[in-house]
Image 1: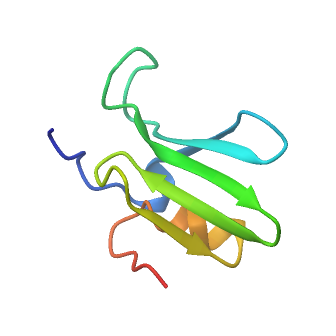
Image 2 (image 1 turned 90 degrees about the horizontal axis):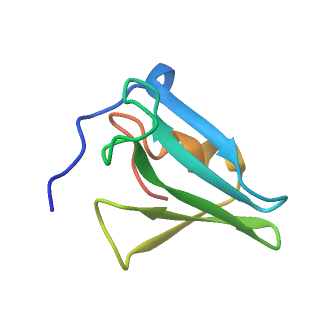
Amino acid sequence: MNQHEPCTLEDLEVLAISDTEWRVGDRRRGEQSPEKVLGYIEQRGSTFDVLNVDTPGRHVTFPHLNSAIESFAIGARAT
């Protein structure tokens, strides 16, 4: 699997797919492009689980939605 090009925060597009789930994409890519989707965020109680498509099977948990979104950007670190 190819890894996605690095994104800045400005490159990220966040789309709510339910009240507790978001799709994170690369706004530089077309909607039909396989490189569009970077991953998903799911709220579980008071935390936010991130599934990054470049690291399948690995979930990282964040205390805030914004920090979960920022984890998809260049230089982000899991906490």
